[in-house]
Amino acid sequence: EPEVTQTPSHQVTQMGQEVILRCVPISNHLYFYWYRQILGQKVEFLVSFYNNEISEKSEIFDDQFSVERPDGSNFTLKIRSTKLEDSAMYFCASKGDQMYNSPLHFGNGTRLTVT
Amino acid sequence: GNSVTQMEGPVTLSEEAFLTINCTYTATGYPSLFWYVQYPGEGLQLLLKATKADDKGSNKGFEATYRKETTSFHLEKGSVQVSDSAVYFCALSDPIISGNTPLVFGKGTRLSVIA
Image (cartoon, rainbow over all chains, first blue to last red; front, side, top):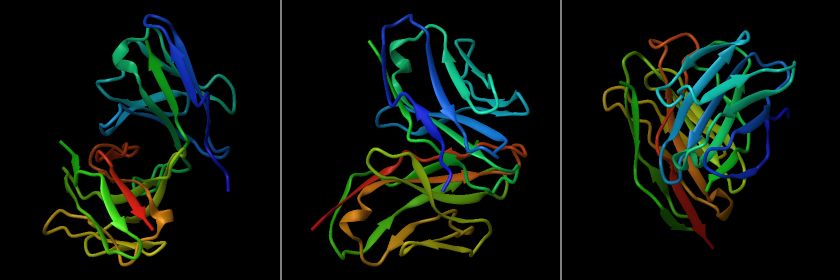
């Protein structure tokens, strides 16, 4: 079964550094998402992306965050200047259609640790 | 706004015990409801879903019924196995927000099943 893949599985970075989290969505999917989960807290929506532009973003997704689909397969999340509170598990997801009741397919996540 | 509330974990059960994980929601519109499961070291996987009142989603012995009158979507399984040990997330998708509406998740409930 097709999968969403994320790399790296764990990223450690120093405060103030830039990080890029990478995702390869399922190949025929058109809608892409980033979520994050701070340890012990809810899975929170960050951003959705369709047709090479952001569809929606949450309050968390401020100017320090950006997303890009640099080629036909990758979908990246960049954090420009990391803060301690950015430490979390980041999940990429994709789905094939716009129906609100279609399930999202998630990757295994990237654990980001900011020191 | 939209929100999902799940029972606090962790939940520890013996094999073959009955499982209930409570989930209630608030939503602006008429949401679809989902249960996702995260096995150790893996991403979130759709377990089951229900899209309208009184619908029952089921998969792998798990069931949940969409109760509009109590705004609930409790997850149940009659006889749990050690392999069911995972974190379970209740989620909703509300079409009122937008066509490409993101999922709203609960905090997750960790289930540990001991032999």
